[in-house]
Image 1 (cartoon, helix red, strand yellow):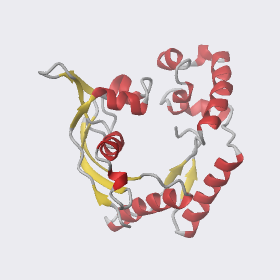
Image 2 (cartoon, rainbow, N blue to C red):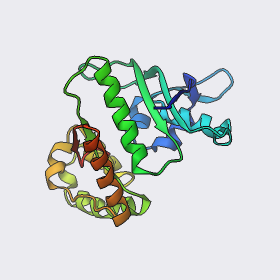
Image 3 (tube, rainbow, N blue to C red):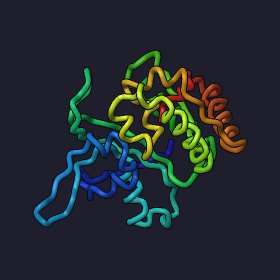
Image 4 (cartoon, one colour):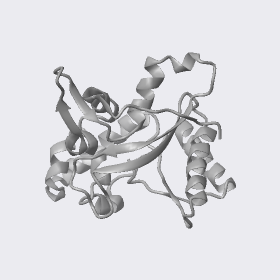
Length: 220
């Protein structure tokens, strides 16, 4: 598939993860091991790999190397939250990133590659949960619609969701408590024509590749 390995640091500046994922995400609110080091810097052990890959891509001017920007990483990640069944505070994770290619082919290739990898490892019956949040304009319009709905039923929301709906209402959709009933009752995101066409094409390409998938509107 032409992906190259990129080895990212275990410890990064905390602001890297706050800026990249948002202050109201689960990763930032409760899942990071963050601390002040001996030099007075606010740092964190990596909870995920994508921000480190993008930082390296920018800082090292990889876009000027003349090669494709397709990378994979393998490494330990760390989450401070209380682990659910089958999860750990320290775990091994693989990931793949393709930077600078807006084609549906890029999305389909990355997904297909990871499914094939799992199959080669001996797993069977793999499927993919798929969703699209569209472009910035799609999300902006949906945010207002969803926020109005959540305000109207705020008494039913769990305490964490009530505290963050004004800042990041989409997080309520994948809340472990509120997500299941919101999946049926909350308004659905409406994609603009360009984003809808892109998402449809990704699904068509996955079908051609023989990759089963489920559209999951609660995946944010």
